[in-house]
Image 1 (tube, rainbow, N blue to C red):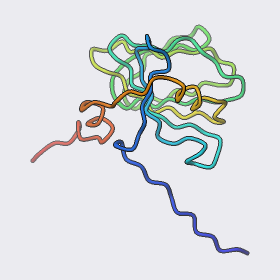
Image 2 (spheres, rainbow, N blue to C red):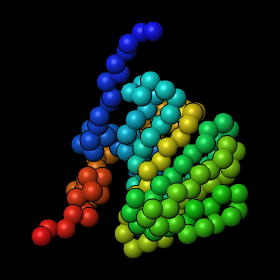
Image 3 (tube, rainbow, N blue to C red):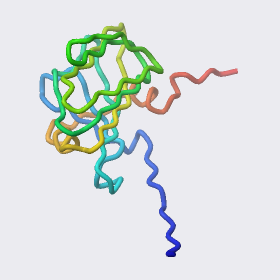
Length: 150
């Protein structure tokens, strides 16, 4: 038996690279982990939706995609079924499920998104336009937006 220590990869929000896939998109994706960093076929990102923002309807042939709502409210639609989403909700989209996420709240919607296998998702994200994460994004990603001073 070989003793092998694997050092975990640790990143903070200041390390995330963010992109808009298409210039007219109303959502941005901040990459947390990808196949190169994780050494496994997955993509983990935080998807940030502006007020009224949404993804275009999309589907994946093999990948399972999971969304966990961090902040904000919205609607998730998969194969014609729509549900409301709020912080703490999780949504699992099976392969071939045509889906979209829409921000229906008065502020930004933040979701943690995990796709396994990657199915060229991170390559699509990186082919977009690089964007900066602003102060609000950094507060939410660092969870300092929920800190209460005593």
